[in-house]
Image 1 (tube, rainbow, N blue to C red):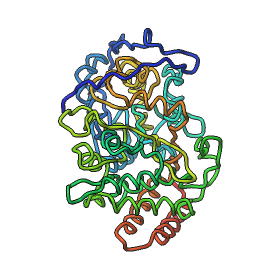
Image 2: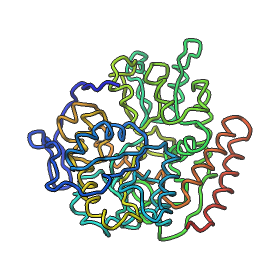
Image 3: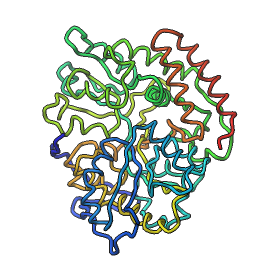
Image 4: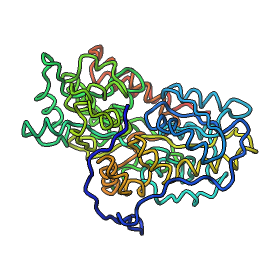
Length: 453
């Protein structure tokens, strides 16, 4: 993959929580070396997900080793294996890792199982400048008001669409689910090797995530969250017990939508997951694709891709009772509960350094398309790299960035897995949508009754 610079986007002035990041004073300086090198025997050890953003961090390893004054050892896993390794690590007498990357939905489970420490136990949280983080990403790092992690990447899932194809056919961008189906039908032409839409339909975790976020687009959280202005309350998940909401009318509408998508998808859709859905989009075989912003480098940084420079980005198209929403994904860096006490102080210094505006800007300049901080998204040099940064900021201002679509309850991984298996049978035609949802509801209720320890 080559790193390049996208066309310059229009720079505008906006107001952020009491400060104005104007172009004349918004440029973020490069990260500086720590005043004192870290004293961590064996170096700094980090457990991460094997995605493009963390791979950018790995590519910058030597530069950051000079900044922090010690060796950095980064170990990367796929999403399911990352969770398993983090849980295994918590059973060890001493943690093998100083920092672990935690997927946002895992937060409640990892807290209940004692995997991670509250940030307030190990540092002065004000050092992080919390108001600079995208609101939804920072709130998603909390459990009942206590922060447990620092956003290392905030990457909403959006709809990617070929704006050149839509323009040439006189079609408007697909802001509703009905418009997605109409556009998918219009562009779908298997005989020419062209398909309407790509999405996560692989059995298990991938499809489970798709169903959760599709339910949100139809206005339905997967558990009975209380409704509040602008969505649902996922800030107080430890205060009461919840019930799954997988077989409601809105959930059924979401399942029916997936069945409609299936008709206009590539022939290998039932094995498509995170990366597979973006590759055919990048190469010009698909008109639309659901994808996290962290996957955009596959076509934004490769001018040989058909989608390079021709991609528009939208929040999730919504159903009749839903609203535009950009479900927040990404990871927070957390401190393991079993980290040796003598490593804590220097680990906190590394945590502050790796999540600072200067570091986040460097990641963006090196190919990342995730920016957890408002200041980074407003930096004029960052804005010139991709339209994503300004668009995500705008979605945050409009309150479209939300984390309730994947509520981090302790049982969430089991519910995701259940949905991903039951709905895969639905997509294969083994069971009807209603039967798949009823089975998922019953199995999820059983898991929700179990104590997480």
